[in-house]
Length: 204
Image 1 (cartoon, rainbow, N blue to C red):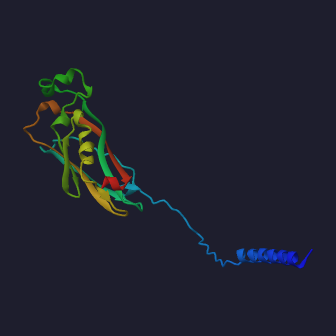
Image 2: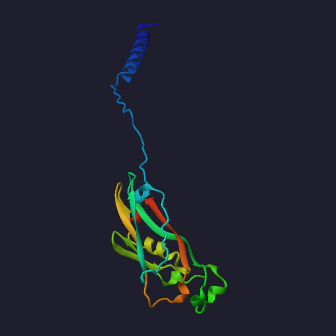
Image 3: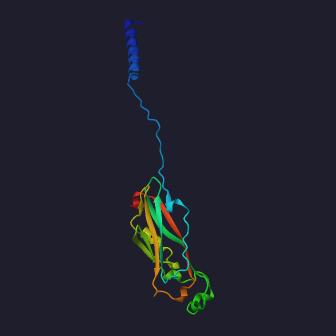
């Protein structure tokens, strides 16, 4: 092997060695962030301090000549996220409980008492207020069961920020010109339904 061949082989080995050294010579640094966590926010509805939502019962309406009254609920968002509040009534029923002689003279449903036969609901004007301002009105007739919830949903979003509260009230009344003996002993039953949903952009 002549010197020129040996010199060429030596150059190739040297270039290969330099290439290896270059590929190993880049600077580097690594930083590691520890303890990263994803935590979901919370949304929790409390009615009147978080106790079981007890029904309210109003007996002997008209005892003092007035057919009116009201009930207030304090609604609190005890979670960490803002929520949109919805309110509705469900399982509305008008009951014909009994018929005394004065009622039987004017009430055609006395012969078939029971659920759906009472007249009280259609005579009661109902107003729903939010922090003292009336926002929805209706009555308690069976055909209007969904009206309160539907009208509430049509409002500008009722938003409760985390940790804050609003007062929702139901007020009812009936003028003496709107009823007679046909509502004696009648009753209205229903459920109140409060729902708090996480607020999203399209709800605003």
